[in-house]
Length: 77
Image (cartoon, rainbow, N blue to C red):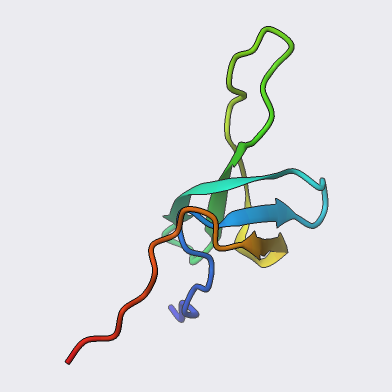
């Protein structure tokens, strides 16, 4: 099974190209068949002021908007 290197880092602000949902990348799941899904926590709140449930999308249809809360990469040794 070939798994390509991922570019989406947990903490990035991302958008699903199909639905337009924007939020924080909070999970990355790799299935046995090679399918990679990204969990997006919406930035908006419900009408009651509660957080919305995260949605999950194929990594190929998710684009990075900004680095958000992702840690800075530091190359060592």
